[in-house]
Image (cartoon, rainbow, N blue to C red):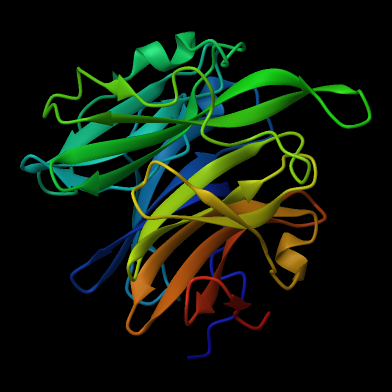
Length: 292
């Protein structure tokens, strides 16, 4: 009650939110971009904050060294919590994971799924935006690689493409890459430069994927699956535009909230400042932002 978008504005640029519902509120993990030097690893960390109701943010602290970004879903796995993210922006970027027993202290970054950089379709040899999904004794990892593609006008451009791997190894050392020969999705007529920031959640009798579609003209899109392996594209998600997201928006994170769903979204305003806003949905498909 009384909340307005954007719900969180900081002197830092806030990017790539991930929310974990905990007793008494929410832990928010995010990319913290400090200062104007986007290209310096010293400008980037994974940070964490606690909020009871999205009106006040407390206990803000970095949980990674400098040079890391884009936290994914925090999931329980064999007696501890896993936090996936990426090295950034130093090249080559790699997928990393930290572990925690108490959601307070986190281990140092450890590279995992390094072989994703060598996939034949990932010609840039970069891997970003990991997302974890636990399905019984199987841990799924969706990740993004990049390649040059040609759009319908014959123009060459870089596209972000989605890969998919699974493991049953508690140590995350042995993976089976399901998208070895071709990406799961990415380059298309509606998104010639691909996809990024994938979020996967269980909705009723199927799985729903909400993600950022396109890079230059980014929007949200939705796909569905019965088995987490084969996906049906359902098209774009309509999001009413507000000032805090006037220039760009993306990096959605969605969670169950009572009888409906809630989304935290990164928005970029006309001054290129990135902040976080909230949206709600009764079904995970149709979204309404808080008033501005």
